[in-house]
Length: 288
Image (cartoon, rainbow, N blue to C red; front, side, top):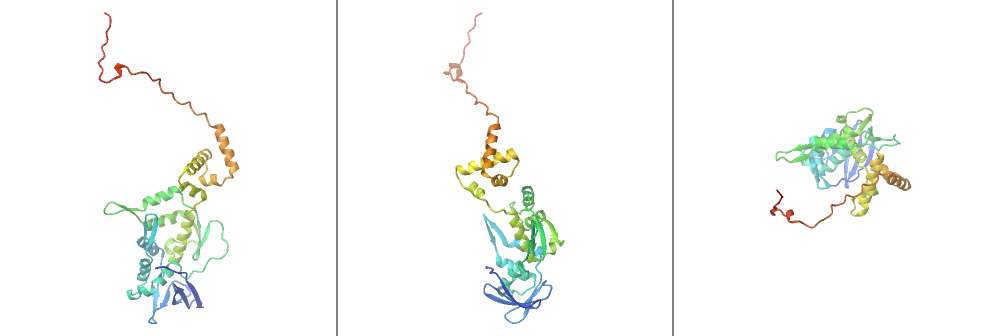
């Protein structure tokens, strides 16, 4: 199931609106709080969809997102059905309302943020969050804590634990203050997208060069590690330095490096003697 961008057409604020998803139009009714909605189904009756919360969102992701090799598979239909079950919707309405359930859980009635925020801050739903990238140590610790031992002894990643750990590490501050468990699904989705973006730094040309086979990748790695060790820099700092400055640094390192010790000389070779053979019998004759 593919979710298309929704196109809402509000008819009266806080009362009713129509929305189109995947070429299908839904008529919705909402109150001023936007905490729940009612949707008109084919029979004309109204079916309520209640607020989809933070915990339910993470549990549904854990159930319906699977890592297959390097590819992430997401069962959108299964996720949508969990949203409908959470609101007590009859199974006979699942096929009709599944696209709307995805929209309600992932987007909802949130307006896009406007204005420029201070550095490090992101608008997520009705609140703002100051984010930072997590460290390698934090990620390693969260990953280890998120591995669950199964009955057969295999270890499986709990996506819910992993995402909670990532949010705990990366969310520095809220404005206004808010608890994660109080967030609705749309705000949770926006927050996860923002945090993943902060932690998944876009690959630079140097990163792509390191992944390519050949001598060029090895030379770049050696040069980068050499400067990192000498200066206490990160690879990103080395790569962002003007090329002329890198040339100067490498020249100075070469001039100040201690001379390499002379190679050890192998002992002079000689012709093998009879006594060198393991099965030889040596008779020593001495004068009385």
